[in-house]
Length: 147
Image 1 (spheres, rainbow, N blue to C red):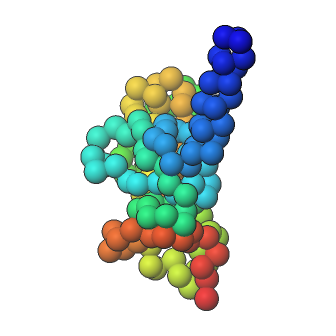
Image 2: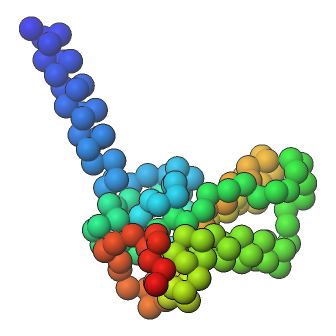
């Protein structure tokens, strides 16, 4: 009987995690295209976790691209200007595809990218996301909102 109770508890926990996976905090590096989340208030610092939300509930950001920076392994860290140019070009193109060029000017872009230490470990992951220009919350997905 105790074994069945243990199995029941495990199934309950796993089921709850599955059902509420889009409402729990998770790693910023685990975000996928289309995921909605809240931009952390400490955006100037290293971001490890973000609060996920279903896109039909209040959220402040939506992922539009997950990619790898094209720099080769062992390549030096790009300068701030090079990184800004790469992110601007890459994220802007992704935004226009994601929402449509007619609506792209309604959004501001943000990105998560490797820290200096992660870059030295050959991590190249970049996550581009959108927010509304006025930073107000959204309650729907921005995908395909082109007129």
